[in-house]
Length: 166
Image (cartoon, rainbow, N blue to C red; front, side, top):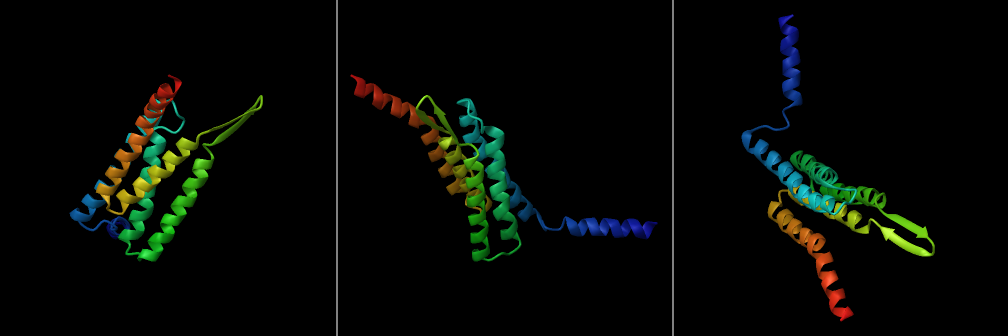
């Protein structure tokens, strides 16, 4: 019975051997946490405005995108393989974004809703990719710019419309 447990523990140790040292654990943890935090910032802004895709959605998209590039990178994939992974993420997020876009057709009005949410999810995936690839400064800068567009854009648009009415 003792030999059986030794084999089980050895097999489990092998299964969890993808992170080999403290440095690698720190990098993986930092990249995933940064992706979660930055996605959460954009998600919080969207949730504050009452949009369907809020904090949890944006965090999951960002962490998922980071993980999709982090794992192959850790496994030693070449740049062309990582490029295909990124292409897959972009296409997949396109489908997710398409699900957030609604087109209304009531009484001769043609309202399209959800484009900003779809674009925000696309941007959140890009931020997650940057964080996952170890480009944390780029991810942070992109988040600041995206947040500025989402938070300040409506305010600036409203001010410009108010000046046009006078």
